[in-house]
Image (tube, rainbow, N blue to C red; front, top):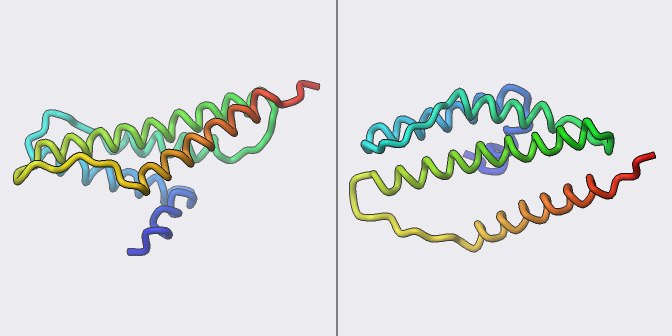
Length: 131
């Protein structure tokens, strides 16, 4: 597997949605196998990914597009948060020795980049000229 290409698949219309569905279907199977009470619905992840993709196709300061930016950020964040929450539940419920909870340096870098992106998008949308 090529991780960069796999991650970039989200940018391909339809294929990224299918990838999100496959990932969440696997997470759902793992949760069920481990006996976790938490459930995830692959179709919801696919829908969230589709909403993210559709609202991502614009760049404008018009009020409608500012709202679409907000929808895009919410949809993308929800998919990632629900997926991570489900994976955390799997690691707790799975058989075997307890998994060590940790945040890697790369996790902090990714989180910092996401936060910076959010702040920049917010500042850009707030400071757009209205004329």
